[in-house]
Length: 353
Image (cartoon, rainbow, N blue to C red):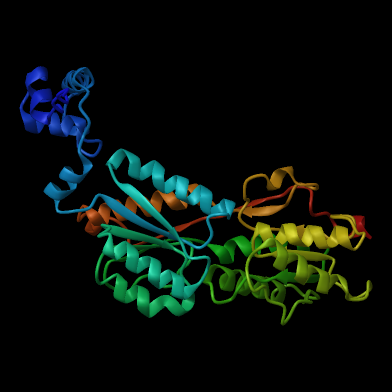
């Protein structure tokens, strides 16, 4: 019977490279390689390649007293915004030998709790939570007493975290919404409507607040969408609500719509076409997020760009700092700025008329 070749060890690599085992370990660790000079790193890497050595993540995590995993809880993996956010997280965790464990809640609070429990059973070192509802505040505060938690995109309190290991990376939705609504107002639109996402989610609630504040500050502007709420922030709900708005008599219906995300805006575009109308000739539409490909829609979507990749990266950095016990030097809350992006789905009211 053939004898399996012996698996090379870290000691073998160190001996071949002519360095101490601890030096070889640091040289091969993405998190500590900066502690070793470049020449030594190259020598150790060459020795590892020659021997076919592979680091043992499980053994390393046991030595560190940590699992080497990071829980990432998102609402909808089909949402392009979330895809970019997760990519940003991975860009930060890979060099640190930290493995993201990604779970999806489908925006169900009960599912959020069950998936978080699974992550706790898996002994993750920290959790990035991008799926919270406002009703989850107490639960998340308790969770942050057990391990570091980074809230991303969706928060609870404008003042930020108040205790425990709770950190936040948010976006200024009030600022982004005001930019979108004021753009429409400057174009001459006065009859506006918003397609609201679920108000149980802080980001949507803040966008609704920003919309109302911008309307209230502009003489003659009116909101024609009270009482209309999307059950989900998806295309079908955007289409349904836009159809209701388009059923209003022509002389009274909105001339512009602000949708709380790009998926809702796409639904509004579909409803407009269903009604035999055109954007922006008959109705201007503004989305939110600047999801991939919305610039390729017909017409290209005017929207508010959120730095989804950067939100992911900053969330991962805070989580890594917390895992390493370096939170004292890091902020507990980051607020990233949105950017208004004008494209072809909006035009002046005078031109549309």
